Length: 231
Image: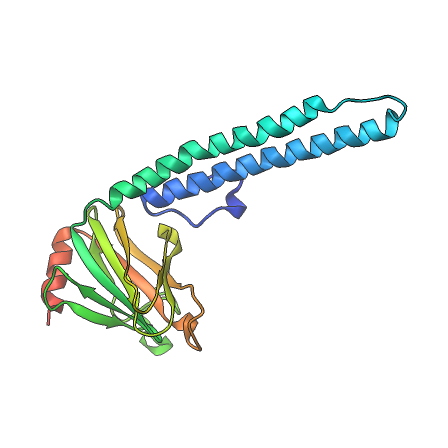
């Protein structure tokens, strides 16, 4: 999203939910700028009164009124888009067409497609001598998780050992993977492409070498991929 907060903005959004998160972030930055300007003007007003009107008795009821009304207005402005975003996310959790169990290990990811019998695999980072032309270093894996676009996918995320975090910043996805706990996340992917992420929880010596690669494709391509990879 092109705006004057681009340097402090989130990553490029690749889904509708991520775009809403990006807009809400920029909106809060605008409110923060308004608060900063208000506080600076208020301090300037108080300093001028202190320096140039020492002999006069000045009442600050109006300033106190502003300090009460202004924060209330900010909270109201934040409440409407925040509730809308929560409502939209709640709608995504109502139903799912595909369920994928994601398990974090030291230091790789395992994927199991619950709706496709026999489809499960481990995903390891590719070493430098395995990379093909154009594949990103430290992000490409030997087995990508392939998902069809425009359907609601439920991810069930857990860990087999320590705490990991399944995170893809371009999709505004980040969910901790903890042993003995099954965390769920529903998501829809409207854009076809390959998206990369990494474990964002410090989980050991090779924490930075367990990337995530999601390949979003058309439904027919997904069916062909499932047929070729079923054990």
